[in-house]
Image (tube, rainbow over all chains, first blue to last red; front, side, top):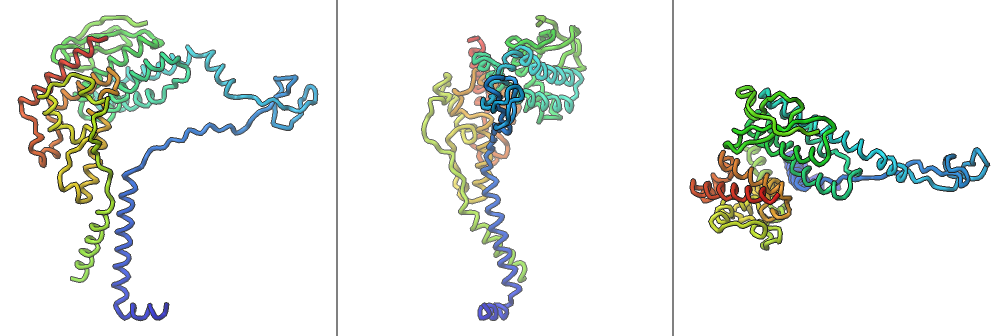
Length: 243
Length: 154
């Protein structure tokens, strides 16, 4: 090592050092650039069963850890309690309720979006769009039947895209409204299939979309047009009452 | 002088170094069963316009220019293509639900009407990708008709 170091020192070691540092940096940069390209989103869905419960074979109500004794008869707790089945049954019992509750969140975010558009408020529309996107993504489908799931997912994939576009296009209200048109059709189908949990009105604006018209859903009977906002607030008519 | 030389040397090394990191090309060379031409009725005139102006970023087959071989240009293009295909992929159009197909057609119409697509940063280099007024009308008309026929299937 000493032998190697000496000639290096003679050859302006400082210069060499800085160059090597630069080269190393370059390699590091090159590799990080490479890495960032392929960051796949791997979502690990870990179903941890941290505390497994055991029940007494004679008294199923008595539960505890493995090796514990039953407080009723003193027998060892041997029957593993399947927490999953317990969950499944409770979910089944409240299927109707949970389905409506979650859709309610989707609906309320949609209505917020609609109201922002009636006020020509592009930023609030974007915020509501983002919230709607999250609500759509987080909807718990476990309570749906296979058929319902297909219906929902069909609407969901499309609606998420529209909500996303509305969320990322603050300042471009016309673009937001274009997506709101298609989103409203999705929402109508969704409410038709699953129920909103509240009375909604299907309104129609005949002028939008080159006079082809467009629908929207509203929580109030009074017409407030989200496609043209304040400039033509009362333009439109109620077509259907959804209960 | 010495510092400038050093910097240039480093840049040269970085430049050479990154040439070895190449993304996988977007060239499948085959027509999937989900391709738009297997799903919808696309007249040749429309298909040619789409291929000329859209397919580089919205299909599984990019017609690469020579300078893609110079990094980091290749990386940038790769990113563009990935993004474009996420939004709309003509090679995979048949796998979309009917609802989504209709949404996509609608978006095609508005993007072309507003001259947002093809991207101006793309047409600067690909002059032949600029849609003529006739091409635009063709695509918009076809999209409208297809959209209507899809919605009447309900």
